[in-house]
Image: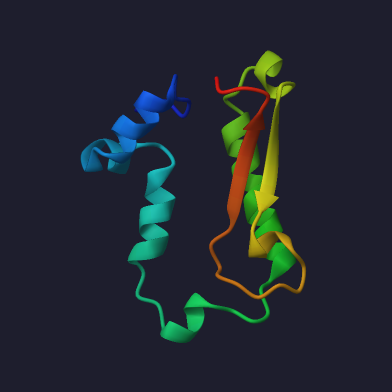
Length: 106
């Protein structure tokens, strides 16, 4: 299984530009599954997003990712739920975004 962390920008670029490597990356199965579902046009943009439910999904993903992060690294990074799904009452898509912030590129 591929590791979640990349060493440098060249590795990020290599993963993104290699479809097989990208498909096998640990973060991809849920994303590929979500996008492969047939969706109605009206489901792509939602006026009343279920903010609390989405926030719960994002926190679950944070826990999954951070469960494999060493404690000394956890204290140096921050997880942020961002985008329309992070703002109560904001319309948008049902696909939440998050960022992992570090003081410098690992």
